[in-house]
Length: 364
Image (cartoon, rainbow, N blue to C red; front, side, top):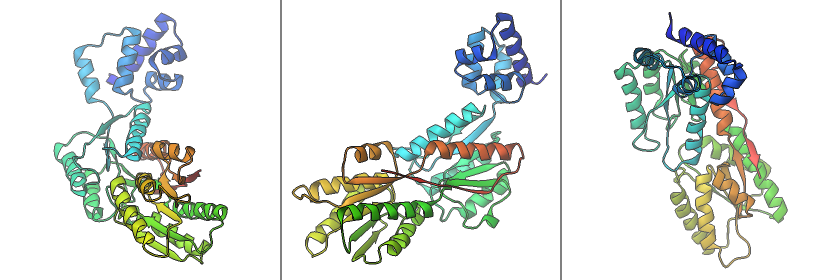
C-alpha cells in the first residue's frame, strides 16, 4: 500500500478510536479540519512538521523504515531567494513562502546564497539542483536580476522540466519566451511608480510648493519603478524645476545615505534645494532619512520622502511623523500566496496564467 494512503488510514482509525472529530484533532495539532480531512483521504501530503505533530498527538509509533520512506516521499519544493541578510522584504517573502508551502503539504527547501543579489550564486544553485538529481517536485526562484540570467534560466528550465515559479523580478521580457514549465508572479511596478508620483503631488499640494525639485534614488534592479515614477511625475507636474535620477544606491541603506548627502550638500551650494526624494525601496528611503537628520538638523523645513515596499521599519517611521510620508505596499503575504497557488496549478497540470501581475497599494 502507498505510504501516504496508509498513513491517512491510520490517522482516521486512531482518531475515531479515541473519539475525536477532525476539528478536535486539527486544533490539537495546530492545523484546520480541512487539512486533516485531506491527509486522511490521501488528497494531500502532510509536511514533516504536521506529520510529527499528528503522530505525537495520537500516540502513533511509526516503524523506522516507514518514517524513512515518509522522508523520501516528502513533496519537496526548492526556493532560491535573491537575498536574505538584513533585507526585510526578502526575509518576509521567504518566511511567507515557507508557511504557504507547508500549509499545502509541501516541504520547502531553501537554497542559501553566500552573497545577496549574486547572479553567479543563483546560477550555481540552479546547476547544483540539476547535478544532485534531488527529487524536487518544482521550485520557486526570486531572480537577482532580470538581466544576464535569461539564457541560464532557460537552459535550467529545459533540463529540469518540472514547474518553476519566478517571483518579484520578471525573468523574460516577453511572455512568448517562457518555457511551458515556467510562470511569473510579481507586483506591477508601473502602477507602483504611478502611485508614488500621485503621492508626491498630494504632499506638494499640502506644502503649496510651486516648481518643485525632486531627487530619485534607485538601483539597476527594478528599474521600472523609477522609470514609471519619472514618466508620471512629468505628466502630473510639468512645471518641475529640477529632476535628478541616481541609480547607484542598489537598494542599500548606506549607499542611499551617501548619495543623498552628496546631493543635499550640492543643493546648499546653489539656489536649488530638493523638496522631495523618491526611493525605489524603503531600505534606501531609511538611508535618506539618516541623511536628512544631519543635513537639515538646523532647518525647519525638510524634504519629504516617498518609499517603496512598506517594510515594518518604514511604516513605523511614517506613523512617527518623520519626513517619510508614504510607501508603496507590496504585500509579501499576498505575493507568496499567489506564487504557491500558481505552482500548485502547474503541479496538478491545471490551466494557469504564465505572467501574473498584482496591483500594489499606497501606505500613508
